[in-house]
Length: 157
Image (tube, helix red, strand yellow):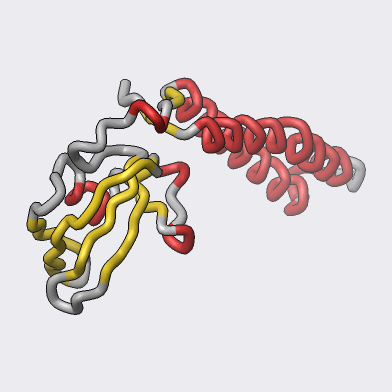
């Protein structure tokens, strides 16, 4: 079992998403199935088949999210080791080629949001920065090639 560390907010958002799927989406799809059944012969009823397929996909998604939730642990951000890049650290890096300074917060896959500067610990950049210290030069392999970063700062997320 791989432990998935999350912020309290990320954990609570995952709980809410599961509740939404179970309470609202299940009811909506059940209504679609009932409506399709009323139309008669199920053997040639495309609406029924589509609703049943949607129901299967929903149940699979709920199951996957519950597995993620079960494997998740809330990490206290104030107790994060700032001597090296790790999950729930904010890292400031400089792209050595462009001299651009970038800020990333390393988070779990479920909490990743590139627009907010939150990158997954399992992403190429997030994974490449893990365990590195201030002053380290890091080569990160990304789909477009290799990016060279210098780690300038590590702080609380």
